[in-house]
Image (cartoon, rainbow, N blue to C red; front, side):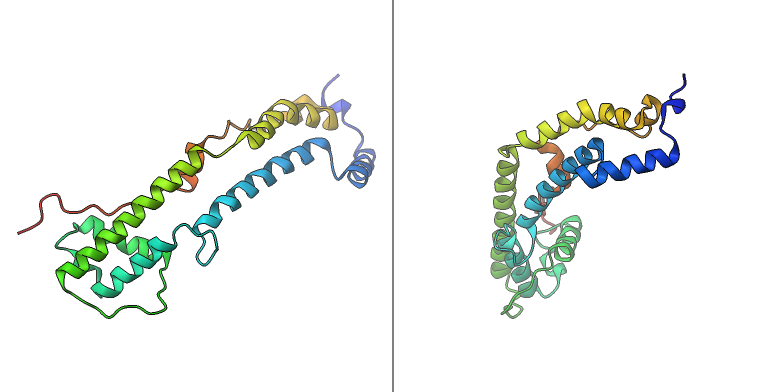
Length: 204
């Protein structure tokens, strides 16, 4: 007997689906997939809050502040060319677009080298501090609950879907097992802040 022959008639199957959805909120495999998707979403939201402007847990607040202050003092990023190569100048422009620093009382432009270099060093230290803190946080994050959901999804999703569809072939269509989640996966999604590099040999 083929797999297709074991599938309930269309009308009967629809009534079966409606009955299960009404009583249990959907077939078991759909509920299992939704639990895992919700867990990923909650994890990502909890990590994203550390980068949200004006959020009480914004760990990038000092980076934004010092980036905005440096830009206000320089007036234009090109003023930092005595210390930064073009690639680092481009990176600062990118960070400005990405982080959107906003100062309530921005300082007036001050082109004095000592002032600009001091502000630049403060920014670099803030970036390093955030990166150290972020790396330490991800490495110590307890991923056991979501790993358990991933393992259960990989073990039972196909079985539950096969029982519902009464067809192993149809149950496997489009299925991809979820790999274990690591802190490096989260680092790929929520990366460190790139640090502008100073000239190794400043231009004369």
